[in-house]
Every structure is written in C-alpha cells, then in structure tokens.
Length: 166
Image (cartoon, rainbow, N blue to C red; front, side, top):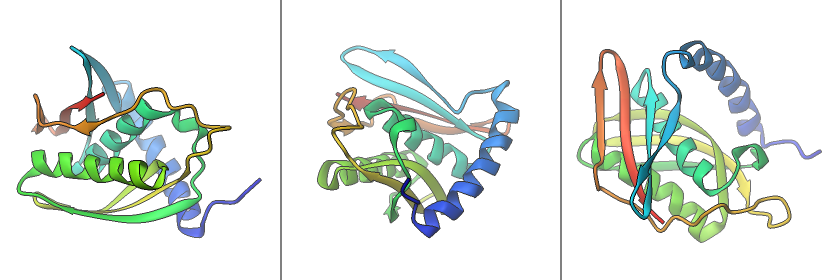
C-alpha cells in the first residue's frame, strides 16, 4: 500500500482529530447537505468556524464528482485565493479547486485552511490524480456559480449555500 506524502500523513492525523470533534457536533448539524435545484446542483455546508466551513464546502464539492472514500492523500498543493468578501472568496476557493481537477486531474479529499480572512484564504489540500480504474466520476461540474450564494454566521455557526453548474 502506498503511503501518503509526509504533509498529507501529518494532516491526515490532524484531520482525524478534527473529524472526531465534528462528529460531536454532527448530531446537531451535518458537515454538508445537498439541495435540489433545477438543472444544477446545490449544497449547504456548515462549520463552527470559517476554516471548517470552507473545508466542508470543498469536501461537498468533490463528493459531487467522486466518492471521497476512493481518494488517497498522496499529492499536496498549496492553494491561495483572494476575493472581496466571504461570498466571493467561497466561489474563488471552490473554483480554484475545480481548476486543479480540470487541468491536472487532481481529486482532493483533505482540506486544511491555514489562514482565512474576509478577503484571503491559504490552504493545504491533499488528494491524488484521477485513476480511471479506481475513480468513477459521478457527474461533471462546469462551474461554481454566484446564483443564490451566501456565506453567513448565525448563532455561532457558519453556513454557506453554493450552486454548481453541471
């Protein structure tokens, strides 16, 4: 069995600890859920912080493409995006991740937000290149849209709604 890169392995241990914390809160609110939208697909993601919100939204995006369980954390990338406000930052973030898939065939499953501000995000992401023998693409995503987009904090919880063009 292939081992993940050192950073992905270390992050994987951190992600497991984080996952256990999230599971404590999952009885109250899931990490994400899919919503119906005519001819497109939408999801709402949740988190106790902007970091968790943006990581959970990225996870929801890639779960649309392929089962996350089939992705091994072998490749790592640093992703930086800038945009004026959390709403546009969300679209820029998810669009950049989709660009990595479209141009490199990189399927991602681990997302560690290192720094986030209202107009800037820096993250380490881990995954692997698409292998047609192991990865079945469920549906293609053309773009992340601004349609019905929001990012907001409500009663201490962060929530976003994203619609993707299929």
